Length: 380
Image (cartoon, rainbow, N blue to C red; front, side, top):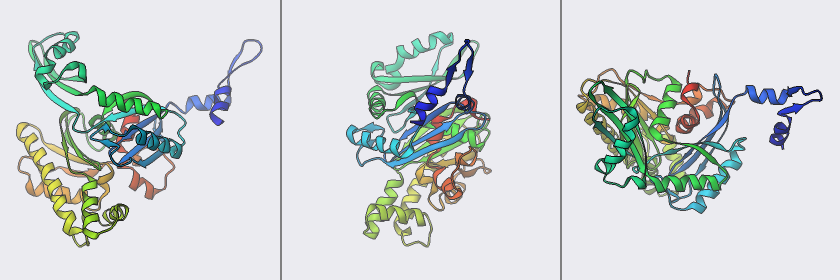
């Protein structure tokens, strides 16, 4: 009802031809554009509504469980259950807008660094399309693609980052969001949404330095490496928060929710009852992160890592940041010895009306959703 009233009051034409903006309408205009960030994951659906402007403001949010086996590796397996979960999220969030940006993630996301002969920018896309099957061994008609020129020079080959994903899973996700009443204005990839959240938090000079992002999800852990503001490497690990919860559940003989609570309370504490099963999994995760970074910096010896930024629902596990930093320092020879591991929490820098305890709990989980809703021009 409030939305209908506001819409009707937006413009009032008075006798004499004078166009007057009502107080309510002026207020709505000054408040800036409102948009949604829609992060549909294997275990949770996260939606935020931001009011964009000089300082972004979190207006509303919702976090609901994704029903089991509904989403697997960014592919919708059970549309009916997904629609129910989305409708629940919309009901909880009471969002005032229904349009926004959603995200692509998972192992279906393909990344290639390619070199092309010198050519005008307008010819690049045609050249990429012509050679596409050589880069990915897939038919272009079945894929959604985009590219970014990393470097070019007069008479020199162009270095290009090529991103691709199968078309059908993307269109199915967008269609499911539409059926739930959400209008998708844009589809972004998880690494770039994560980068915007980091820029918002001013955690590193991402335009000049090399930064690694570790997004700890329920089903997977996504590692993205950025150098001088450009996405240079992506790897998806098949280890996530659900693996830790499952190990605790089996070890203690409790149900899933009890195991989840135990995991959140004790995390990686070495003296906890669950350390016996959690620490071996932790070491497996840390080893894969270490291998990813080692390989990248062995191939890019002119670069120095300055920061590892962690985010996602699994990033709030007790001891994760400090123990990961210690592990990397002990096992890395190719990294600079002056990097740090930090938690990304965009709720520390945008305005909102949340209590401090919720800010610490929700911020890392909502990082990608905030990054989806925000745009570069709104990052001060």
